[in-house]
Length: 147
Image (tube, rainbow, N blue to C red; front, side, top):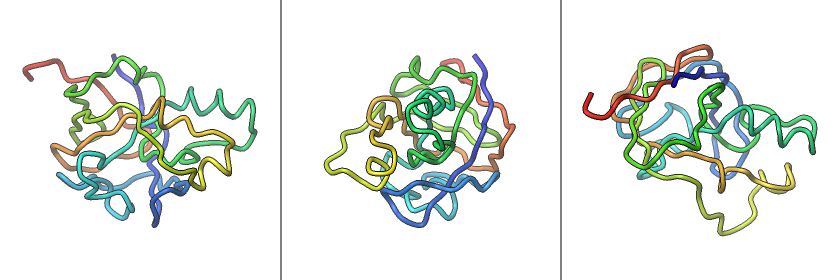
């Protein structure tokens, strides 16, 4: 299965929407350079499907990449098939899935702006095994086990 990066998003603060910067450097064992979540334990990079964002935008027009605080917005790759431990290539970087969904302890800016946050149900979190550039249009693919 192969998809494509539709947006590369960063923010200065946690719990906020992110802005699409089109390309960035993923730092090994850290995350996206310049993003508030870089270095955050096992949740260094977050991924979300553009298809899920589009579905949410039917209820609240104006939502787009970064609206839910995700770092990489992916199209054409069904993230729900992923399991913890799966490895992905995104651009030059290699990511390992470390968490599926998340528990929100408080309502953040994202919830108040969107009326709901799909990250707890649909978000995928990864650590960076190999750093490198990632940009809009880059392929995203699952690495077969053992490679």
